[in-house]
Image (cartoon, rainbow, N blue to C red; front, side):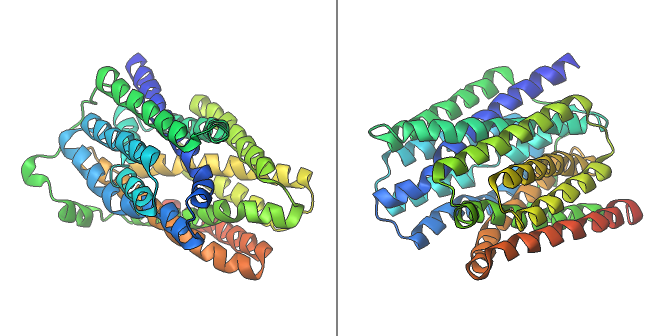
Length: 385
């Protein structure tokens, strides 16, 4: 147990440094676009480039981790992130920005590999507690990342300083992985078994396909909310950019507290907590559609953050329980790939809805989340393989 806890802590540091860097850069991309006279279409391409590249690379990197091990792929993906942020530090044109985002996306399979690693070294009973480590990393990353980004970008040469700082954090994660993380002792694919296409078609379990479908719907809703939240709060409550940043940090703090609780007390009743998560998200989205004051927004955002924490912890835990040592990395890669394509489609749909009636967007998301509750029972209890 001491082995598992120590290696989960190292994985926490690896993912945390990734999310700190992500939180440093992404919130200030609009400012970068303004400085270099990039139009909204170009900014949209930059925002989608990472997810577009990761859509293709995540299953491949996850599958390679099934063959040669989790640790080499974690090192490879983090080295790619190091060079991507160095390129971003010196970028002064749209094409250099685009190259940096694509490079980071193509090598950005570390979250999928980290989840596969956790599944390798935990039992089914402790799986959710292990997955909560990733959630804690996300919560802390999105609390400190935007805050540090705001500090760095208020300085001269803020883009250069923030990008190099993110690169340095990623390099630290490379060193931690190389020197402190041990390869889990699980069965790996032989060379003759290593075929991405055949392995994809070997995933026949109905629950795996159902989980991926539900994750697709969830991520479209979440990414759409993430994209239009600042527009919504400005339109409804006339909040400033600073106020929105504080709200995001507050949501991250609530999520962090929930993840800390789950890391100690989570059970293996995955379906129950997934349904609880979708229920909180449904209440959060429908409540968001009726928000009329800042106090009400904070209450609704708290419920929303709890729902995200449950779903992000227990869905990958349930997914991993249906995988084998030989296919776990591939399945986690496909899972992340679905999230990537959702983060491309979601913002496009969100903008098209928000232009007509911004409250209606959250009503649609709330209904979708409510529908996922009975679907969860049907897919994972009634029609369970």
